[in-house]
Image (cartoon, rainbow, N blue to C red; front, side, top):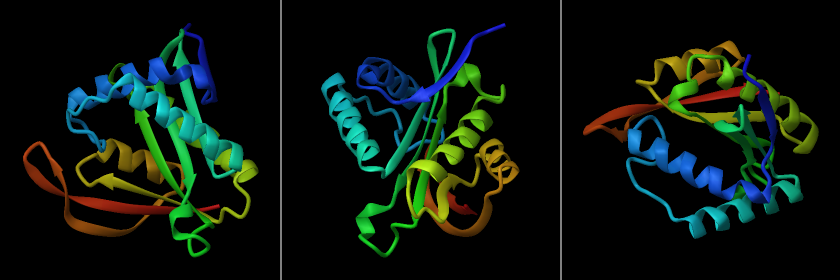
Length: 173
């Protein structure tokens, strides 16, 4: 049986995350990256900024390791860019490595992140996410854990040469 560990982001995670995101980006899968590669200094700066948000109580970011291999990452960011207008809303992001998809890692990460966000992000009332309409596995998972579709932006995402809808989903806390 494989050992599964879910824990918060740490400063020393930059190298694992650097390899993780660059590997997933090459897949041109359902994420923001479409093959672009980032540098280790860029990832280190990103980790530093994420740790600062965690310290402020505006972010929960969890990593899942299976036998010491990074298998998935989830986070809920308070939407601070809207100042007070959306401070009660968290934006969810979830990534699971290809070799670990379909094994329940995503669900475990989601449920743990939601539970920790309730405790660590004060005033959080709602979690929002955006998802490729063609990512049916993710949409089904989000519905299983209580998200509901509230809208679509038609043709908002370019995926493998075609424009696909972006589904907006929310879950009340």
